Image (cartoon, rainbow, N blue to C red; front, side, top):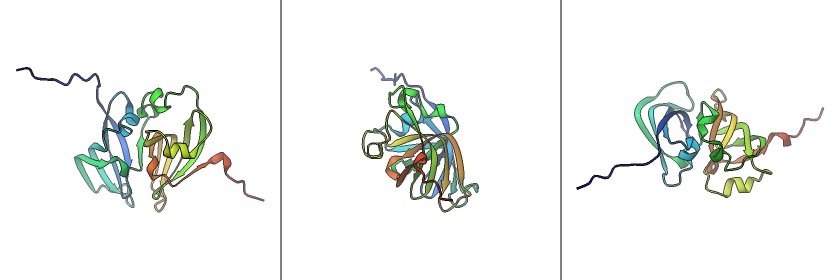
Length: 184
């Protein structure tokens, strides 16, 4: 009798992440492959994510620890944002940029029901809101040099070199260079 062993070429490692849902902030470690956080969060074969060494806090008291678990699990569709400590943690350039080598940087503001996010979105061509939100298989969009602020709790402010935003949770996208200048 032979025993089958997993001979997957994938190597896994843990990555520190700050994950936001509608009611909680969960700080812990997510397990990723060489495809980075983008590969893991956009993996359509898995609808849930596990956070190891997870510290939980309620959004209205983001620095007060509510509980600490070895592992917590959540459905990806309920995740609003994943904040990472390094841009490289998003994954290889080919995955993050969708295979494009040259991109245009768009300073952007994104709102959800709970959060406002400002940062840089890199796109291969012109900004197309409908295509970003409805086309393709990427459920989580990368935002660079991002700042997340809770709408009702402005003291909850997180800066992240690389952030993933759940496109299903997006209410508004606005290009900062289209901001109307105030009249004097």
